[in-house]
Length: 512
Image 1: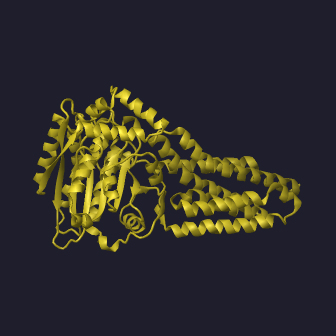
Image 2 (image 1 turned 180 degrees about the vertical axis):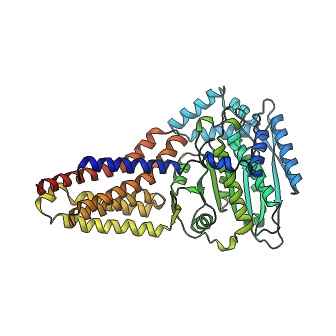
Image 3 (image 1 turned 30 degrees about the vertical axis):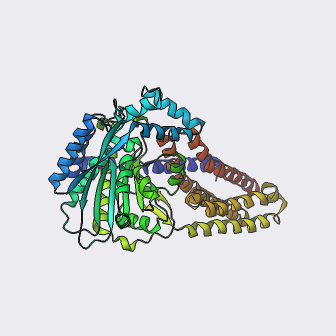
């Protein structure tokens, strides 16, 4: 096969995989939105969001009071018992918190923090806190949580569904977190049509999240030990932007059975087992952080693209794409409905970690860590054997290959599979294809079969890395970080293709 044909095939395969990889983190198509345009629930979400995110509504503001009255009226009209839970906070507490956070930031993070202060027109921590909270005068104020419940006499477990209904003072908060609140309202309406539920449910709309998880902390601290133990699952819905598909970016520890159940009963779940690692590096918190610290199992969803609108006046309902809003509310409603109505939480034993990632058409791939560990160790063993075999090959081959690179590949696969299993699939799968390609090429001298394996390796490697690189670049606004990650498969397969081209050239010369 001429090298130009091989190159063209690789370009086509790479283009297809990049397209599919990006599509996995994009929301439902416009065609689906058009077909769903008459769906009452979606229309209700649009209406609710237009009211919730009409203007900025920080905790201490007349607009927040209007939003709260609207939410209470809607919930009461559904027939839910609903309560208001006020809590006091002081400006001094918030300033002290900001100073503590600032002291823990590195130089880059401090630069970003200072830039944010300048953007909102604040020169001091106090000014920033007052802008964020809406507390223009005075040294203390109240926030108010909204709590609605539905219980069943036969239910032993409770599902806690959480979103915050306050915004910062510089944003209407359509994405953060208005569309979550509007979607939960519709989930509540959906559940009014259900006669029986398997689990009790608490809907918690927190206030003061933007000020440091104030509402969630107060709610959790008011629970008795018995009430805390009865909460089997927290579903928290957030946003760090206003575009893209909702991503399950954080789970509690040992989520294998939880993820498996979720994947079997809901389609189009976008989740990557490595994202909690990145999330922890960002030093960000959500309301779920409060419950996670108390050892409660949870799933944390968020839209992470469109960061340029985050906490800005451009975070409006007009700037949320219909596709994103549709898929977000669909995720909230389906996941909430499933866990409240269908899932027996006693059957989910959270005793095993999980490695998971999405693939087009198939959906979410979920494997236990021991499978990744086995593959990692298996690659190490094969690499050691193959490296030993290389040293006994003919001199011509020996010049091209040395045992050391394979020993390094095997060692890296084993170490990552043991130490960082959540990240292991990004290394193990490309290395596995690479190793098989080399063995076929130099042990069996099957150039064309090696080309097929290499092509498949490039395709699957691109499928794994493209959504990762895309989300990091678009969601975290970190082009350099995205580029560094993209270098891993580029280096692996560039070297492999170079060897293939050498062998094709040698084979062509021998045939002559």
